[in-house]
Figure 1 (cartoon, rainbow over the protein chains, first blue to last red):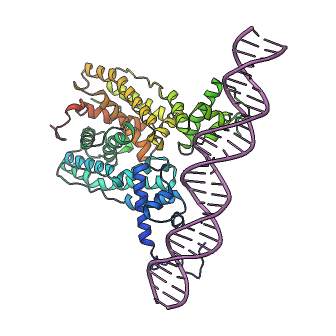
Figure 2: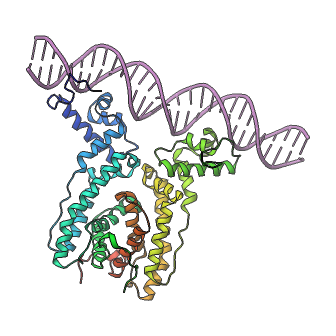
Length: 214
Length: 214
DNA sequence: ACCACATCGCAACTCGAAGTTGCGATAGCC
DNA sequence: GGCTATCGCAACTTCGAGTTGCGATGTGGT
């Protein structure tokens, strides 16, 4: 309940807030990367940030809101889209930078929250959709250039390319559970390239043909 | 509320010994499929099984052991390996049965536990490795037949084929978050077939070549 | 059928973490 | 240097994990 007379949302007197705000969010990301969402304790986060538990609860409604807010800052991290001159090189670079981001502390924290039981939080699910929507959109020029060069068939879907590229990497990280290194990235790039060249990654509207073609 | 007996409604005692054992495990799987690992309460499981909380703790050391035991029974579920006569048909059938299992209550429960914060439990991680090791092993004849038919290059790695096939399906389920249906299965089969034909899924020992080959 | 024993229900407990409240201390701004 | 919003602090409630002792009941052996 905000009162009308006192300016509740004025931006100037955020007080000594911003420093504490940033410290708590950084501590949240660190705790997330280390122990995951289930092990994340508000008391530990506060202690790590050099702040009292009550202060955290004054800024954030609950533990979920804290995690959502902490992730929102790092979710906007831009993975640069390469332009090496060939679609093979571009795919490999995209895969490598994705792997690099996933093994970084920030990436590990985001991944931990996006996969753990926090996914049931609608804000987390929404953030997840936003991430991939953004990547799909940013991958469009890469695919468009490859089509213009004649490397990929006309009608290749950028979303399908990004999905095919990211799938083996996330599969390794989340499901099969092996080490995540450049070998995985290059394998993902090869699979994606082979599929795209075969015309399998075309626009999803008309994917009705049989699997085995001539 | 609807028909005579709702699955959650268990006002009467369920019996002793093995009957109670089975009821608790079934209730655990059901709770897992509905609310995930974080929301799984021993008290709710006991209530659903028509059993007291203490009884559960007498058989299982803690909540983690309960989940591990409940999953162990359903983890051994065999996904039948097809033999349609062509690798394209086999891949499509494997993908479809994987999707079918993942959307079933049992599959949802296993998936929920295998991805949630329960992964930090060593027993869960071990069970996960066992599942995929089993699938890799069972997929060997399918790939061997395809190689014998001349459909796939010599040296194609069954593990890589299964990974490539399962990756887009799990990616859809866990990361990109879209609907999981036969369209996804067929797309996964097409990608895997294209990659395998291109010789990208060969034995992992010597994957050092450049991405774009002739 | 009857008794013995293992098994289960039950209530009451400890412990840790989420989230809340009131008050006193302090830092930032004018 | 004073005013006020912000923060620290302690004490509190609530909830679920996990434990304990005892009483009740079902099951097998004879």
